[in-house]
Image 1 (tube, rainbow over the protein chains, first blue to last red):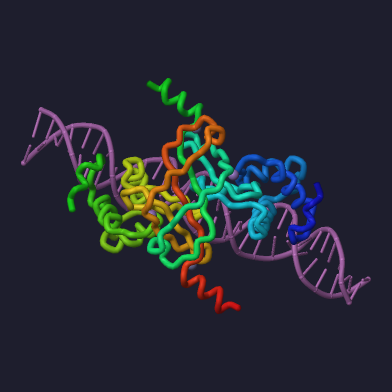
Image 2: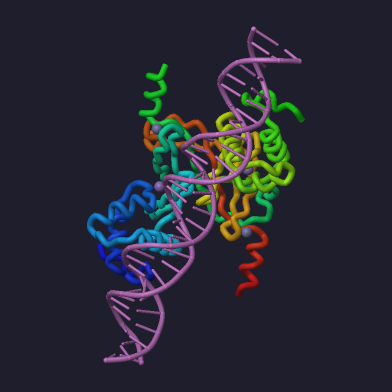
Length: 136
Length: 136
DNA sequence: TAACTACATGATAATGATTACAGACTAAAT
DNA sequence: ATTTAGTCTGTAATCATTATCATGTAGTTA
Ligand SMILES: [Mn+2]
Ligand SMILES: [Mn+2]
Ligand SMILES: [Zn+2]
Ligand SMILES: [Zn+2]
């Protein structure tokens, strides 16, 4: 549990609380999600600390920032790179753990060095499919 | 030029100005980019109208909304679906016109119907590569 | 063409998310 | 004990976006 040593920043109670929340988290929480969860056990927790900590963790590669939800940021505690499937109806997000080797032609590459990729699949989740049907 | 008839909304001078701006646009403008460009020739243009028009165009499939830039929305006037290569240094965005058929296992699909995908490639653009080198 | 009406405009206010700030605090290090 | 570097919190400020509403007008219809 206390393998947080090697993150490379000071371990404060607030940060540990945030890390503990992220540790087992399967979803893609917003800063507010993190705050709401952590403030319960840590009533003095400030929003600023949540943002600061998420930023620090991002810089250290412990969380990834997703820009899937327009207008607010989501964070991904998943440690290995993966892709996402987003429901166009309800915006539910599902992980796709798989890696793709995607060729890009020299010309399209435009001189860039490509270091990785992230795929956002779009689709309809089962419950949104149902809603569509019953809406007829 | 005036093939805007079939968009399915009222053609006002403001909307025509916005459409004209988007027409030839190769990049991925924000609402502010659009506003700044259009207000020059149309000094009474309001930000609200830009947002409304972009929203209406999005609903009609005339522009796509990109969630590449966290914290602000970008719009893509490109008519055909395509992918993007983003510089991790300066956030420059380059189009990748190519389509990928990406398999997703039944299990990972989680009951979704998948309708499309969008790949975000990450890399370093030529000028950011130079900066890295000279920073040593 | 004139009148009508649903829809669009634009100035501004309100909201929501994020960032900036500054003083208080904490845990080493001297 | 004093210093120091880094962190925490509450709050203010900022930035992008959305909502409001009185006024204007495009497209339709008579
Ligand atoms: Mn994920
Ligand atoms: Mn594009
Ligand atoms: Zn759904
Ligand atoms: Zn660059």
